[in-house]
Length: 226
Ligand SMILES: *Cc1c(COP(=O)(O)O)cnc(C)c1O
Image 1 (cartoon, rainbow, N blue to C red):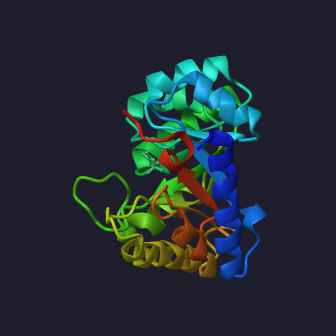
Image 2 (image 1 turned 90 degrees about the vertical axis):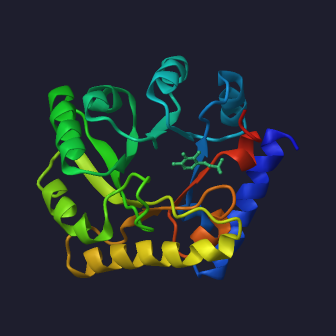
């Protein structure tokens, strides 16, 4: 299928899933994950109306951003703290803040640049050893620290749940992330509604049913990666 049809198909599925949960699909942002995909594919998606793109690998991303500065760029990869300056300089949104050291380094660099940036805290919801993300029990302390910042603006939580080839099995993790956000809202530690970045090609419809405000979809838009 053509990229344009893929995008339209995904928007239709997002809208239907949002409706099933009594929400407006227009309030769900589709981030097209363009990692390891060429510039031409991103240009084609932009021509079809796609605005936000997600990248994991900093060097690759910087080349793309330089060519396409008017797209909205989300950093969704693992963050090394010595790379925070480049992330602060070049991205519009950072979705993978997972520890205080990184949050502080981003805030410091943003402050020096006189720039604000939307941020999501990545939560290791399945408590998997190999995965990045803060553990749920440590989340509240990190949120409180971030609330003292004036350039890094906390907009929500992000997660990559444990892999399963049955997307229904990921539903409980999306529910758990939603509950974490609810509890932060109840304690008035964050703005309500707090964002939820969850759902990828295999499970974005379930994520939207469970309250995702942002889905990160690569393969279903651009095809398999090499
Ligand atoms: C690669 C990636 C995605 C997209 O995965 P697909 O299965 O290709 O849709 C989403 N989020 C993150 C953090 C990724 O690394």
